[in-house]
Image (cartoon, rainbow, N blue to C red; front, side):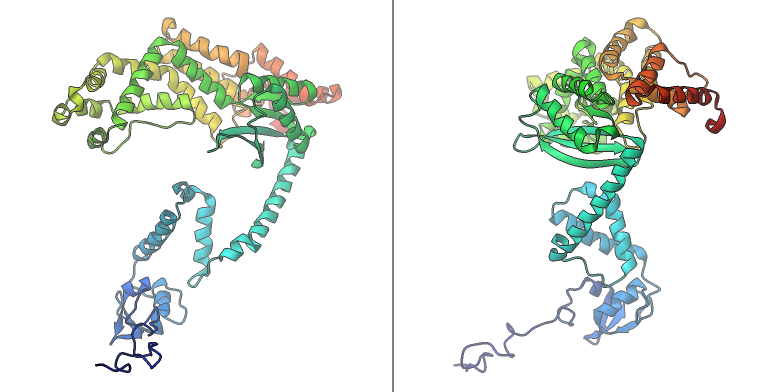
Length: 497
């Protein structure tokens, strides 16, 4: 029988230093090289404190920490490695970053944020040995510091509101509990800031409650600072906006331009039979394919991995972008439905599959897609302008809608029977809902447009401009001064030159 001593245990049965379970092995010992830097070095004679660099054969003393400085070229107590490539080093860092993002379910869009890139710039400046913030630091002092910084930034924006005026914007969405949440944002030349969120589930049902909610936000921002309030174009919001303008005489309610353009696209689909039928067939086609794994695989073989569905800024923009995607991939899609793989599949032998095949092989369907895109694409271009943060869209809306109409007319070679129904839909939404005096003033006062050779001043533009002066300024003496300055603006005189 073996003794306790032979088993590495003392008389109490507890393992001694001779037992492997209690023997502590440090991270950087030769027997436990878990640090990833060991991939780039080899211990000399099994000594973890003497490591030979794989790239330049230099022997580094002082454990793996010093090897890292050698590889990174920090010149901290060790010569920099002249053999290691930046791409070897970057790949390892990217692997660690990717693991962090995947394992913590962080959305990939974070990589597009400015803060993401700034973070790595600052860490790189620190060099090796950077100690990231701890849990307590993140929830404590750093959070308090960021709150104070945000408050200071908000004060800077408030100062800008007083100087140039601002726009209050609402953005509605539905959360997982089916509650209607309204975000309030404030825009000025300094940028857009988030103001607050409100649970509007019981508010958004009546115009009176919506009016009260928006009126309180105007009071919070300061009525004297608000040029306009932008909401969607639903009937209750429109009525609330009119109530707001009746109470607050020096501001405008303006319907969301993106929402109005989306409604134009919706009218195309609902009121024009060719659009309605073509979009329905396109939707039927994509739904059929994407509900069957085997067809998705077959599709990707023919389209080289590209998808058919193109998500857009709005619901009805998505419908037309998807038609555009189908048109781009017309030949691969047709090849898919005449391929041996399709003919041998079960889908090709059932009624629904045959119906989809008939749609794909119908030349009329593809011609109708082109017809729909000729009408929709010019509006999608306007939608991109109003939905982007690249430039303020107010000063371009009037001219962009006109330009879109002309592009539609040109696309149909000035055949009135083809373009007139589309024009009528656009005019109905533009004249009754979207066009506002602010759009006219923005058009007139935009130097890029005003000084172009084809600039024209129509009655509704001039009327809208002076309506803005009456509403926003109020004081007849100020309006007289501005009127004289407008003459200088038109002739590029004085400081307008």
